[in-house]
Amino acid sequence: MSTIAHADVAPRSPGGGPGDEERTRPADRPSPRAVRRWIAALVALSLSLAFLLPVIWMALASFRTSRDLSVFPPTLFPREWTLRNYGQIATQIPFGRLYLNTFLFSGTVTVVSLVLDSMAAYALARLRFRGRGVVFAAVIVLLLMPFQVTLVPLYLLMNTFGLVNTVPGLIVPRLASAFGIFYMRQYFLSLPSELEDAGRVDGASEWRIFRQIIMPQVRPAILTLTLFYFQSNWNDLIWPLVMTNSLTSSTLPVGLALFSSGEHNINYGVVMAGSVLSLLPVVVLFLLVQRVFVQGIATTGTK
Amino acid sequence: MISDARPHATTTSADASTARDGRPRPAVPGRGRRRPLSRSQTHAAWLFLLPGLVVLSVFVVYPMGRALYLSFTDYSLLQPPQWVGLGNFTRLLHDPQAANAVKNTLVYAAGTTVCSVALALLVAVFLNRSFPMRGLARTAVFLPYITSLGVVAITWMYLLNPDIGLLSYWGRKIGIDPGQGWLVDPRLAMVAVMAVGIWKYLGFYVVMYLAALQTIPRDLYEAASLDGAGPVRRFTRITWPLLSNQTMFIAIIATVTNVQAFDQVYVMTKGGPFFRTETLVMMMYRVGFTNLQFGYAAALSYVLVAILALLAIVQVTYFNRRLVRY
Image (cartoon, rainbow over all chains, first blue to last red; front, side, top):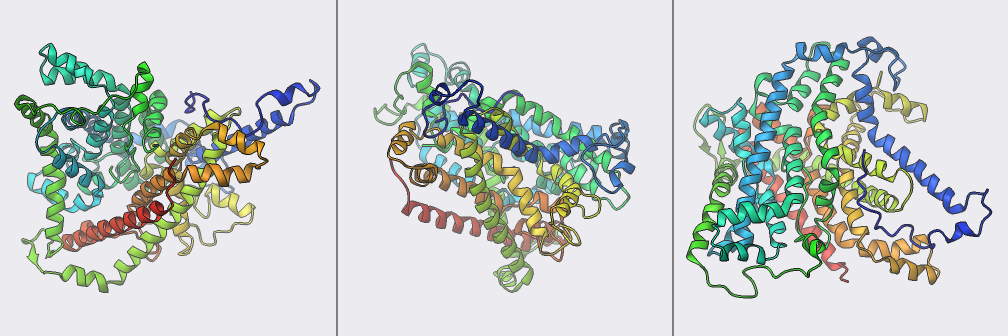
């Protein structure tokens, strides 16, 4: 696990010149500074465990038998281990189907929305045309609107298109996003204008300038938005919940939520195995791009 | 999901361009030097905008207008919408359940936002120092943000189970007795869903605070130390005032996120016990998609908009008065 810490540029500990205390002490006695560092490390470790506890428990519970899970007193570590939960999850709910749906939903939305948002953002940031201010103002207004306002009419609209209970129905309304347009526009604005001036002098079309000159310059923004779109759609609950009334067209969060609240006796080990598998892609993706992602959201808002 | 706290890009990421080649930030095209509007550029611009704007018009703008229209009608899919004027809104004013949902939403949003901002500041100041395992702690605190709230809420529900839940068991050992259970007791259920909400989003705010902490010049602390200021004074006189812009920003994002609370409520309590955790969005879901009263649900969704607008105005005026410029 690499660190979120992007370089150690922080003011270390406010006050106290780093290092000079240690030199004045005998070598065999730890300096107060070193002691403080290790106390801080201990606090950090407890903080980490506290925050990860639900996820750790989930992972461990996915290897427990249903008897082990229901015996008092509850324990963190399994008293007996089993792999059966992972085998059973696909027999109790259409897990493979849910996985595929979730992947299609968040994957398609991520790719298409990135392209459409970047294109719109490029026009708003780098091209001069009448009406630019109006369009940008409209994007800001849409950005501020909560999604839930559109929930009822969107459902009714999808109903008239016959797209309720289908994966395309989930995807289509998310193919562009006001937030993505806004985010990419801010990024494009920071690029020097010589970039596309050179391209224009050479007679390149706006599309070529966009594709081959501008887009390669904004890789961090693209990575941040990729993870952002992917996780927010992968994790979404209310939209797929409203849109689907059968598990075969639903997504993982909805499937697991409905399964776990079912009236029959559920085996929580199986639910936990499903939960682990459903969190895995996003967690892996996050660990891969976490440095860029965290910087991408960290630099927003400052200034 | 738009209701997620999201990375708001208000900066132009100037550092990204200056860092690369060390040149100063370039002028924004289109401002400053006036180029004539070229016809081909106008043409290209609209082509670039077209696909995105079509999607947004059909799936955001039209539904927003449609929701406004539906809020003045009775509609349940069986027959065309019946115009009822302000009927839904007068019903809203006299509906104890709507008042309850508004109250719950405000309690949830206020409690969660205040706790999140305070805790995030505390954790960020701590994680801004340098010590072993800091990287692990930053990742651990941030990780819940990218997990599915609907999925991890199932785990939380189990951990809080009064009979076999690990957290209930540990709580009893240190004297915190949830009685009938965290999610069953009408007084405790709200606390439980708030705790889960704080857990999920805290890391996002910590990261934003950490970024702001790094912009505070280090010599300020050194000068203050030389003048004899202790850690508490350094925090109240330097850190807190210089972070106030970021605090406003985080408070706004947190409020917007928390007013829209739904996922963990749906999974853990379904709004119960006795509607004690039913938030506005939860009620909207029940009225619209369980009772099929789409007109009334649309009216409720505009209550959400009104609350958000009101809160934004309050927060901006409050923080503007004490904004620190430097």
